Length: 300
Image 1 (tube, rainbow, N blue to C red):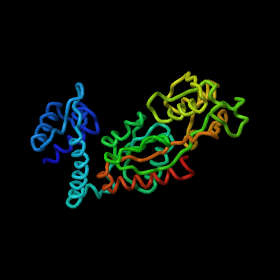
Image 2: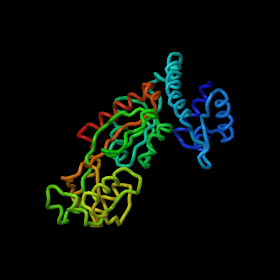
Image 3: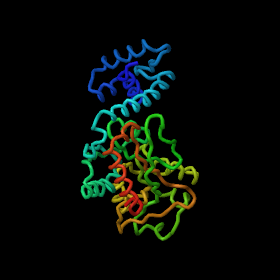
Image 4: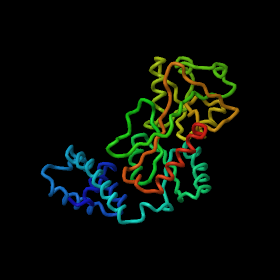
């Protein structure tokens, strides 16, 4: 089997469509289809099938895509033996992060690497639905992702997961709110208030669902905003309550953060990467620096 064909199969599993694979690899969709057909001729069972208008992997195709990760990792190790790129400490490294992590860590990360003579870093903000974070590992060397405490784990067959920190989520309110006088709150205390939520499908929103279930009543979601800095300003203006992260929220005297006494509320912040990427010395240097800045005072 041609390793390039295996890569196409793996990319189809990761990206979900022939068109997305073609865009990522800068080739035509017909070229992707032709090469997948070539791979199919070397297999004894179907590797792909139609699901509506989309081409998706069969069970056998998914198994081969997982094996393709191992093949590509092995080939990457072989390239390392004869090439200098992987050991080049000055090779650029690409890093993506969701908004609050980018706001908190991009500046300190770049400063630390500049002070220590680290590799150049190319940063990008990518705030996507939880299920879409693993796919970003195909576009960036290191992907900062977050998931709720009880969310399903990241797909270990697609990405390597490197835990960074655990961050509590607090109920945020205006400093002059009557609720601010309480040290801890319960779901019943906050369920009757207007809320500012993230968009559906994004991390953090699941905690609001848990609050509604615990209180036995739906929450009044009056605004949907993904950017926590915008949410914080709205909360400070008295627009409603919101869940804000305990470490990556910028301190504001107009805001008060309180924990929920009867519900676990927090998120795991992890680094996602493709396994072969970690063979690069420059990537490991940036990862070490990222760990240092994230743990310096929690996530501040």
